Image 1 (spheres, rainbow, N blue to C red):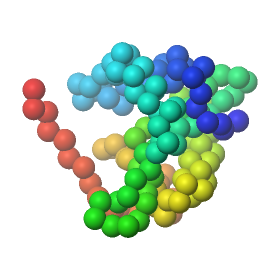
Image 2 (image 1 turned 45 degrees about the vertical axis):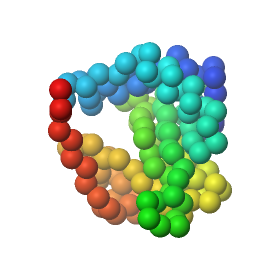
Image 3 (image 1 turned 30 degrees about the horizontal axis):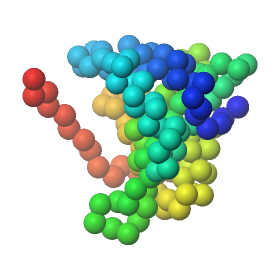
Length: 145
């Protein structure tokens, strides 16, 4: 089942963030901070410009997607900007349904487009292209400390 993120999902969402960190971030020297994650979660479920959904299997949260709704800079177009999309490895088949539901909710909120993040070397980039997404921009990061 795909549904809106709720207060009761906090522990499960933070655990998913930790899984994501172990799978994709730690090799680049980045780690999820549980305290920061908790504060961010609190914002995800109350801010009106955030779409936050979870995928649930047998009453267990196995995936999440969070998008910010805002104007695309210097345009009048409203977009949904994904900030996290993660499904644990055992339930990746839920990923497309989670993304499609996010697209639907964003469309209902007046978004004309959705922007998704593809980490360097991640198979998600191929996935996006297969489902109609096109490369729009690239991001580069440099550690400062």
